[in-house]
Image (cartoon, rainbow, N blue to C red; front, top):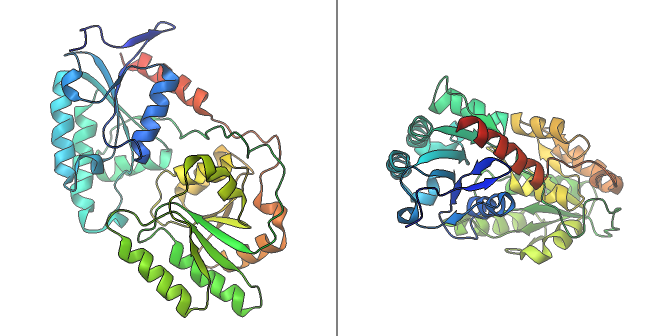
Length: 336
């Protein structure tokens, strides 16, 4: 059992213990670990190791607790009765979630109300919480950082001779892979021999989506290469090895995959929406917006003008992880 004084004091700010749930490979858990390490926070893996009344922070998505959103809400309510809990909400519910939306929205509302304070990674997500989960609730917004890459951002463009269009991340319905394939098929009909490279594997439970993607792509005459999961130490090279990167998912609320493109020095095409516009304003010059009617001409322009798919050397890509941690420390100090 940890001592009742759990929490690390750094420059007169008590950094809460960070409760990490789920496997390290899960995006939310991995990010929570990065923030904890940068903040020099104590990492706790088991709720039973938390001291009663201690300051605790939790990065969460309901899916870390299983398929039933109510389980996540119940677990957080119990935790909040034992410790002084702040949370960062990920995968914020929105109507495009489908049949599970109502249950997810209700669960996130309970989580918000149970916690001492809450944060999201974008104002778009904050607005979703206000609209669908906890009307009138007010949290803070701390954007996802662009992680520093050993090489990538800040370097000049790499010559990519083949017109390969890359989509990075898990394959699941609504991620945009099918839209990209349709757009590439249109380019091929117009004489551009483009192809698609899927930099990722099927999301759990969606192996059929990947199979359908490959089958329909072949039917359209579009070559598709499925690279599978890209190891972390190979990711920058993989993102720099395609001619154009596309982030086309429809129900995005915060996107680590988008930041990975930027960290690699790329300026991807990003489907227009509230979150995309927020990120375009946060980091000018790092993305190119498209909508359903303009993806084909945007892809054509990007392939004809390769330098448009790279960020300018020296461009400010902040906030970085250090900025994120500073924002968290200021927030934790304000709610204690």
